[in-house]
Structure formats: structure tokens, C-alpha cells
Image (cartoon, rainbow, N blue to C red; front, side):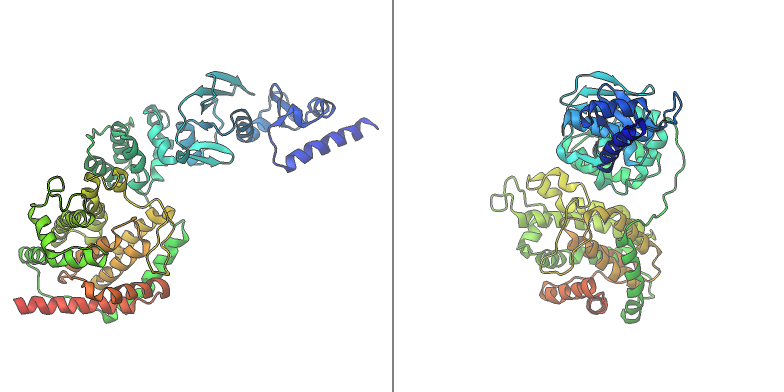
Length: 513
């Protein structure tokens, strides 16, 4: 057998390994004869003792192409073989990979319980530094192309302040991929990272993402932390965040919105031409509170009474001293509803003062949610992380064929939802679709129906319609109308349902006046 035939045999062995996706080749993967032959002819290049990568014979001395091409795959294979599952790239490197920055670093920092705090020198002045360091929790580790990395939120929290100075472009890029504070808050709250929260608030404000910054700040304060803002960047630049559609869910609700508009406009009562008196309108809302709370909470299955609602409202109820109501979910729900109602009332006052209703809803709906469940957090029924905002798990609606969108799509969907609301010119459409799409997306694990009705009434105020109450006696019809809209895309029953309640509220208001 001549040399060419022998080389062909060795190349066949190499090809078999490559078919299996093997990039980091160990000396034990080939016989000594094949290994030596492939190295000698330039088809393999030694990286460290016992580890090789495929290369090209035509590469000249000092050509780093094959190494840079193989770098990440080599590191993934090497680290998995060396440390098993007990390793993870540094949080800073993880952030770079999250934004698809695959630039080969001079030194790749790796954390592992088995680390020996030593440098492993690789080709072309690159190296690995494995440090013995506390590993992130399992749910904070993701895998990307075989590399174990921090999740985006945990990486942002664990990264050093110098990252924002040394890698400002990358830092701003990763911040731009955060669509809602609920992506960051769970980790901040669970571990009590008040200092880091202050840094991230400053970073988000620097990049013009004030809404996210304020959500983080308000939630951390609501959970009992003292927050000091600190901008980690050395300079400030102006950024714009276009509405980037990357999810089929977004296409769907945009199409549905357009399809449902005309039937609503055709069937809904026309708004009043008489200017609203802000004081009288707010007094009327306040007068309706007890009945509204009773019906809204009863629709959600809470066992409340008018007496309990009034007791909570008056401030006479104290979960620490009232044994009858201590840690009682119905009393806590009533207290949460009272607090949320006050927040909604403030939002309505903004709208009556000519603030954009969609912007008010976007800015304030997180406040409504927090107030709704803050008493349960204070009482220890819910964890502080429950205040973190949009859901991070699948959710199902009881007795409904409609399955809400995957939780990973919720931030993008909510952005789109409020964008649609903001650009909607018809008050009737904002009222009906504002409520419907909020519960269709189901952004929270709980409280979606109550917040959806709050949102509906905010849009009623903006459209010069009275506050409406969905009576618990009509719960079945109400739920069936929502079901038809969600499953059959038939918005007419829900539109007619809301229209009827609008007419009732108008009649009652006229009768009292």
C-alpha cells in the first residue's frame, strides 16, 4: 500500500469522526498511526497535549483560520469532557453569546466547582482560565451550541460593573433585547439584589428604557428594598426601539385586531358629546366601588360579602389582629382589590386630564397588578417574586378551549398590544379589544380578569362612557362571549355584551341625575 492509500485510510477515519460532529479530537479517538499521519500531513493540528482540531494542509505557518473556526466547538467539547455538567462560562461571556457575539476572546473565563484556578494555554495566544467558583442555579444555566452559559437575566445580575464600561456596545445591545422588567425582576427579588437593581435601573435609563427602569424600581421598593440608582455607563447615547415583530403570535393579534374593528364600530353605542366633569366622574366611580368589588371578585370565584368589602375599605380590617380574617384569601383579595382600585382611579384621573389612555395603561397596569397582590405578599401567602410581573410559566384558563400564548412570547405581545391600543382611533374598539386581548394574552399568572376589567373601564373614561360593572349573575354569558372571541374569533357576542352593560350604566346614570 503506497503513501496515498495509507493517507486515504487515515482521512476516512477522520471523516467518520467529523460526520458525528466531533471537532475536538482526542488522541484516543484515533490509532497512533492514523493520528501521527494526519498531524504530519497537516490534516490535524494539536491544540493542547492529547487534543487536536481538523486543519488544512495548505495553511501557512501562523495561519489561525482553522483554530478560530473551531474555537467554540473545541471549547465546548473540551469543557464537557473535563468538567461534565459542572461548568459554566462567565456571566460577561454569556452576555456576549446571548447577543450572538462570537468573537474569539483572548482568554475564556470558565466557572466550575472542579476548577483549579489555572490557565490552559491554547493556540494563537488564546487560553482558558478555569476558576473554582460558586455555580449558578440549574434554572439559571442555558446551553447554546454545546456551551453552558448563564441565562440572560442571571448574567446581567452576575456581571461586574466594569462590563458596562469595557463593553458599552454589547451592554446596550443586551439591554435592548429586554422587553419587560419581568425578565429581570424574579432573580433580583429572589436574591435580594438591591445594589445590582440600582445599577440596572441606571443602565436602562441610560439607554432610554425608562419604563423598564421604573418597573424594576417600583417593584423592588414594594418588596421592601432600599434602591439607589447608579448609571454604570461612562457616556449616554440616544436610542430608538422599533417594534420588531419576530413572533407569529404578534402577526395573529394584529390581524385579529383589524378583523374585529368594524363589527365593534358598527354595533357599539356612540359616545356622549357632553364634556365630562372630572370631579363628578371620579365621585361616581368611588360610589360604585363596593358593588364593583363584590361582582368582580365574585366572578373570579372569591367568597366575599358587602360587609367584608366595606370593612376592608374602611381600614378596620387588620390581618394581624382580626383572627376571623387572618391570612384569609378572600379578605386579602378584597384588600388587594381596594388598593388596585385606588391605583386605577389615579390612572383615570390622568386620562380625564387629557393624558393618552393607552400610554397611561401601559405605564400603570403594573401598578394595578402589584397592588392587587401586595397584601398576599405581605401576609406571606405569596412570595415577593410573585410581584415580578408577566408570567414565566404556561397558564391555562379553566373550562376554556383557548390556550394562552407561550410565556416566552408575552413581553413581545404586550408591547404589540399597547402599540395597537395607542394607534387605535375608535374609543369603542379600545374598550372591547382592550379587555379582550388582555385576557387573550393572559400576561399574568393570576388577576388577568380583574385587570382586564380595570383596563376596559380606563378606556371607558377616555371615551366618555361611564364605569361599567360586569354582574356576577351574568358570569356565564360573559365567559361564553370571551370564549367565542378567543376560539372562534367571533367578537360580536362580547361586543354586544359590553354594549348592553354600557347602556345599563348610561340609563342608571341618567336616572340618578
